[in-house]
Image 1: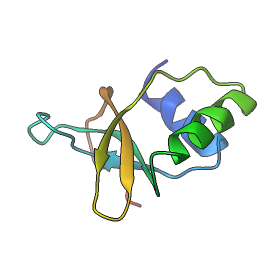
Image 2: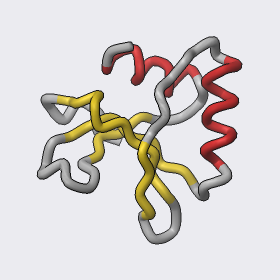
Image 3: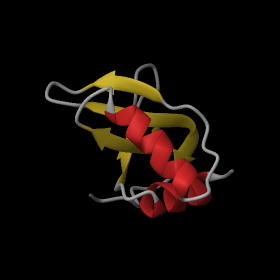
Length: 83
């Protein structure tokens, strides 16, 4: 899977991909998805499966009111996801 395929999988699963720079990424942008709580990770995984996608496990960070699931190895060179 490459970055474009991950972005497509996220969209087809009913989520909105966004840029994210996680811990120890020093400003490098990767693909992420905002979620309300950790339990939503199960829903995200289920929706990937229902859409026919096998997606690697994401890392997560707390964002105050919610969390973000992100994939550091799927870098985005430009700010292409303005959501």
